[in-house]
Image 1 (cartoon, rainbow, N blue to C red):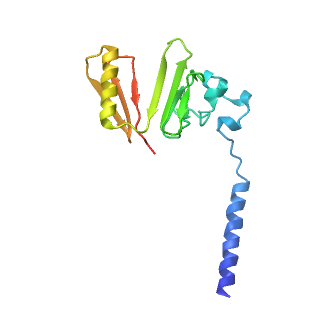
Image 2: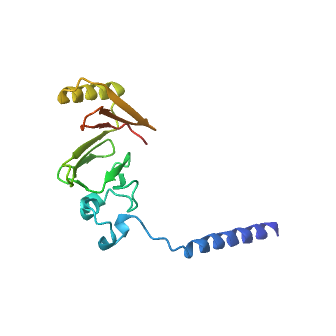
Image 3: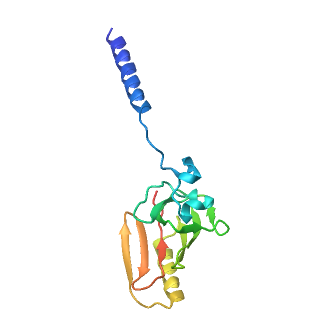
Amino acid sequence: MTYRIGILFMVLIIILLGGCQVDKDETSTNPSEIAKEDLPDVHAFNDTFTRDFLQSTEETEEGFYPFLSKTKKYKMDFPAGGVIDNRMYSVKENVHEEVTISIEDDTGFGMHVIYYSNHTEERLTEDLNRFKKRLGYDGDFEEMKKTIELFIMPIMSAMVLVLMLDMC
């Protein structure tokens, strides 16, 4: 008898929980589920290749949208005016990815993001030193840490180096 009451109670809970989901009228913010004419009218969503990386039409902050790499190992705020060059894009399994982004606005700014998941701290230091030498920059760097992401940029310079460690 107790067994039947337990089963009946579980079936009732499942029906109630399932029914609660039926009436929800949630509008998807996933760009792949939205008609092109309903997407924000910005370069990032107008480019079909770039749109595949964007996770939502909701801005993370003004002028930026959530980006998820194809390796699924890192996220970043992607500029609304940004477009990923599909000819320059490369990914190797989930250990290496290169993303070249041009910003289509009046700044003429662009960026090249390189992700490696198998670099040691020594290798990252060597990369940083090569970057400093290429810039001809002899100043100090500002280090900002957020969880296990590492962003290093020279103070008072427009050049940015983004070093990402395996985050998953």
